[in-house]
Amino acid sequence: MNFIKHYTKLALFAAVVLMAATSCNDQQAAEAPKAAGGAALENLKIRYIDEDSIMANYNLAKDINEAMLRRQNQFDAAQKQRAGEISKFGNAMQQKYQNNQYLTEEAFNADQAKLQKMQADAENYLAGLQQSIQNELNQSQIQLLDSIDNFMKEYAKKKGFDMVLRKSATLYIDEKYDVTKEVVEGLNKRYNKVGGKVAPAPVKPAEAAPAKADVPKLSTEKPATPGKVDLKK
Image 1: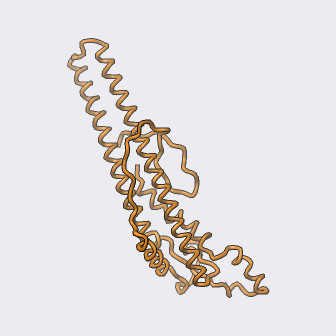
Image 2: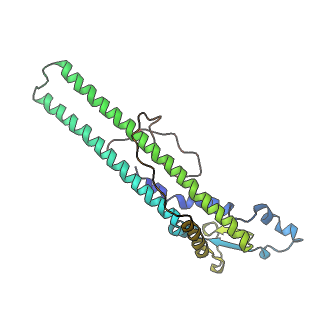
Image 3: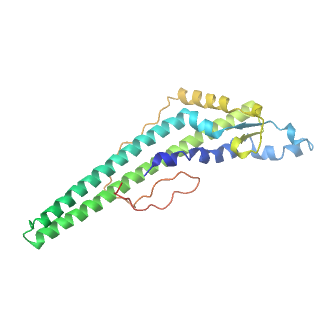
């Protein structure tokens, strides 16, 4: 499981919002030629941003990434601990069996049932923990994109821009239209003003997982149906 690897997809995910929502007014921009009596498109005030640079330098994005790294480490530690406990008990069973230390079939069956329960409990616990992290990831994703979306709308309106494009969505655009640095500075100024820092939710053991969660992936689509947690690492 690697939350951080998937979290780098935020740049691509955010790009969708940055392209569409950062426009001061999509309809106004689309109808600009008509409103100007057929004025040329070059009269539009267009700028662009480098979304990768924004995701790398926006303090909120960096704080979220750090929080997800901590959660990744928590999951890895829990997975390693549970797998170690199961392996230790399984090895002890094997040793007892080889040394003929099981005096009755009932004793062997009892240990076997205990081992199976340990495996099931571990899977349920890790699935619940994984789902909890996925939920945090989804909420952080919404928080990040709403933050960028709201800022870009205000920024474009204040500057009088008709459109703000993604650099990756263009084949060529002159660097003089790049407003990335100014946008990053504005985002961080606003973020720092409200206190900054994303606090990760505490890890709580799951009594029963509603489903076995698959590895979380950031995308614009609805999260995939959960799958089984692998105790092996």
